[in-house]
Amino acid sequence: MSDPVVTRFAPSPTGFLHIGGARTALFNWLYARGRGGKMLLRIEDTDRERSTAAAINAIIDGLTWLGLNWDGEIVFQFSRAARHRQIAEQLLAAGKAYYCYATPEELAAMREEARRAGRSKLYDGRWRDRDPSEAPPGVKPVIRLKAPLTGETVIDDQVQGRVVWQNADLDDLVLLRSDGTPTYMLAVVGDDHDMNVTHIIRGDDHLTNGARQKHVYDALGWPVPTMAHIPLIHGPDGSKLSKRHGALGVDAYRAMGYLPIALRNYLVRLGWSHGDQEIFSTEEMIAAFDLPQIGRSPARFDFAKLESLNGQYMRNSSSSDLLAALEDLLPHIAGGAELANSMTPPLRSKLIAAMPNLKERAKTLVELFDNSRFIWAKRPLVPDDKAQALLTEQARAILASVIPEFETVSDWSAASVEATVRGFAERWALKLGAVAQPLRAALTGRTTSPPIFDVLAVLGREESLARLRDQATGLIK
Image (cartoon, rainbow, N blue to C red):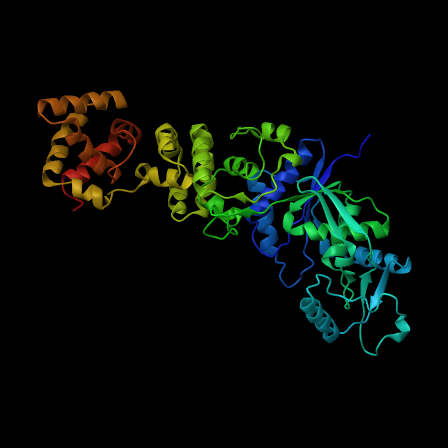
């Protein structure tokens, strides 16, 4: 029986959870969940100067919002430094590592010489077989791995296929710095081994790290996890992803009004394919996801596709679910506090009633928020420029004339107010639009909105009449 699948997401807490990291976490999560395994979360906080508590919180919040849960306690890499030092000393004792006393000046000269010669190998191995008794005074050594000098290092990558490096091109990597702190390469191997990680799924910018880390595994006699190095995400023009393309934190996508399930669905299709299927339930994603279906070419981020997909999810969401998502968003957007502070059971009922129309006209929750403003806006409404232009003296006269007819309507509904408006237009020999457009401008402050009779129904009799009186009497000039 094979070992249970264990994946890990291992971000460095030096900033927000960016969109590429979110996709890596998703792929790890899907692969583990689809095989009854575990996904672990490790915070690689060994860079003490750049690691921050705010970044750690942003990573945790981002994963939680996306619905990507992890198994067990979070592992903090820095707390395991003593274990990492122990592994380095174990390699040293076994003759698989050595003290290197090269000075910074010597290392700089080696790098310059390697560049001139066009070699990728930067360190010349000068302390590999020397006795520490030859060490110059006052130089604190690092511990380097004795990497193989000849032959090949091969990784059968689940995405990249068979990848081969010539060992002559790979350095004796540093395991322990001169101050006794472990390097990233050593810490990652020690953590993945001790956490029983079976599959390493990460960006292909780590591919060469995979070869170097295999040297550490081999020196320790440990099994090497299965590796899958996934292509990075590029912009729609094929260039490196920048902020204008979408290289933002997950928190930014939340603030832009995307649903977590829609962003998850969009991310899973960035570089992974399953026939022509575009829309996946979470269960379908888990069942279908596999590593060999990930392409080797960089995926291209496309905001238009994300918006379109998000709009589909919104239209297919229940009104109550969308209202809950909108309320979750309010603390994260400009003006959200106004609605949050106004939220009452009657207002919730109005928003729920309006939701079927509102969600047809919005691709994001921010658009939904903006389109719903007419429902919760405070009186007197200040029409925008286009609506103000519609509210001519003649339009205000029409409003003043229709108000008494509305006042006679006791059974206030979309059907009853429609009948009232149509009857009024007929008697006054007006086209329906000549009445509906001033009504829309007066009731919503805009020239576009859900169907005007639905607007009247959602606002209710008293609020509708009050807003019409405000405009008919010229209160807003």
